[in-house]
Length: 265
Image 1 (cartoon, helix red, strand yellow):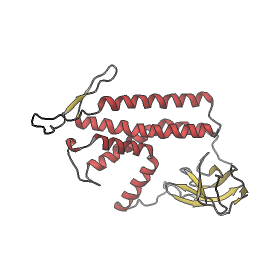
Image 2 (spheres, rainbow, N blue to C red; image 1 turned 60 degrees about the vertical axis):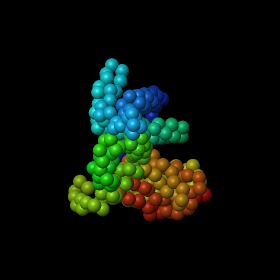
Image 3 (cartoon, one colour; image 1 turned 45 degrees about the vertical axis):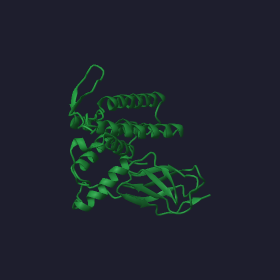
Image 4 (cartoon, helix red, strand yellow; image 1 turned 90 degrees about the horizontal axis):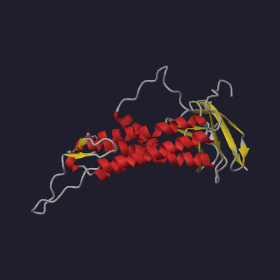
């Protein structure tokens, strides 16, 4: 492909895979420790049997550091840690899938390092939206169930891409869309496909523009993850159960069908 950057196009080396896997596992262990230590204590019962208000502050006992956190600060830390933990689980699942299929490229290693932080920030954003009362009534810290917000933040991190798309669709209807300018990303478009026929397991390359955020390719009702993604091309493998027809590249900004049919042999 002309004008295609050679950076990161080679397959990930064994030491790269081991380093990323160790970092993700270590990060997951640290996040679990943070969640356990920062978790607010359960409210105790008054002498008359009624539940008392939860403590206004708690002490997090971490290695070499024991900060005393207010309940509000503790909830922020819990949301960040849960979002990062969910995204770390997603990164580990994706890592072993691509390594198992021997299709992990070095250009994707940066994504695995950034994904936990993206999940944590998205979890915090969703938490602020909920606490701000934009989608539910606002309440004080004593009214918040830590199990509920932790589960939401973890799911947001686990499905960070779907969460970003949902936030975009929700607030895209509330706010005026941005005007298209010179720096606006090009809409996804597929100009060609190579080869135009093959059986399940065949590697297919779709070329076009605006494909840099492609996540998967549809062959009828079957889908396959996008690999070797650049702004001008996407590679994928024909999944089992694929049907003949026009493959569709799925991106966060819209779907791009191929102008040519792909015949499943």
